[in-house]
Length: 476
Image (cartoon, rainbow, N blue to C red):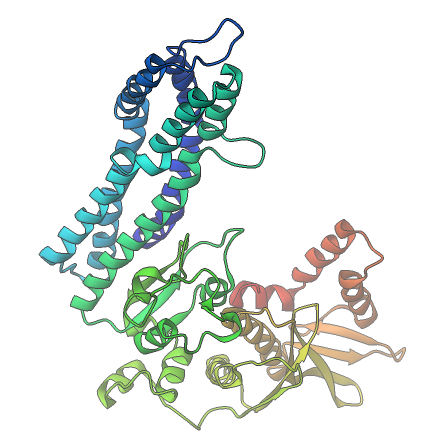
């Protein structure tokens, strides 16, 4: 695993490991609470005695609880979390050293990281536990004694606070889970941003894992390449796209702006990062699009070094958006032109975007003589409005690969002596066109079981022309 992968993965694995350890610890916390609560005096019928002596015992119980939470197993869990914070700082420095040859860590960057780390520790093992755990437990004890509740009710209330119930987690897990995740992510991003600024980097990649709770804003940008200016505009709620809400986007931290966006990214519980990268590692399509939008302004020497030519030239692409969905067709056009040049396509082609629940792409056959057909110079993109920029690009890559196969004569359909059509791959007959059509229909046939459709798709993706496209251009 690369240093960058370790750095990104830690933003999710460290909070997950913390949550697992806390969930295991909470039943032991309840056992300790019950043991401490047993010091309270009860009436003969099992109710808490409404007495001054019982009220005084509360202080004794709380001192015992604080001692328990600052020693032993819980202290070990917190120490392991602290080690991971320190390790994350080292991972970030290793990324910059391996990628750029240096990691200029200023005293401010180092001190800020340490201050944030200590603040996190104070929250999970110091005075920060008062609102999370100590005060609620003290209130339960006080209310129970003041009302003379049954001891069994007190135990039930302590159980709900410490381990939770069917509807709610215990307070320690519930309140520290997101806190640990947000603090680690924010601290790491701030440290990363400061080093990136020192190196004068202006390009970033939006990276992180996708989880069940991944929101639209992150899903739309995950894996993408972005110029600093475009990211700053997101912070000011400009260019948010289909993910826009009245408050900016779902999950957005209040106070997010053109500066804090680099630290807060998607918002609460966001495990994504804006990783500073060299402009040399940015795909040409993204570089050109940023230039055309006025975000990126490289000098002529840099353009030449990066092999950039902006506007015009290359293969002509015609785009028709019949989907009724607001799509950045300019970005699609730029990517398609550059990918066509990479694939060596000689002729122009069209892209037709249509709305469909079955998202993906397609390219049809076109007869070039009475006995020969090939993939035509036109691709279709089927979207339901949820496709990300990366997914649009992957579909274009895949379908243009088929256009290339047709242009070079690698994949053709030929009429046989019976008047029907056969598919040829690399000059040899591979299968009949009717068998191919039957296979493709099985993939989307709603009358078939999921297993049958999955088996049909597996056969489909192993067809040599599809396998070549999938292997070279990825899946969408």
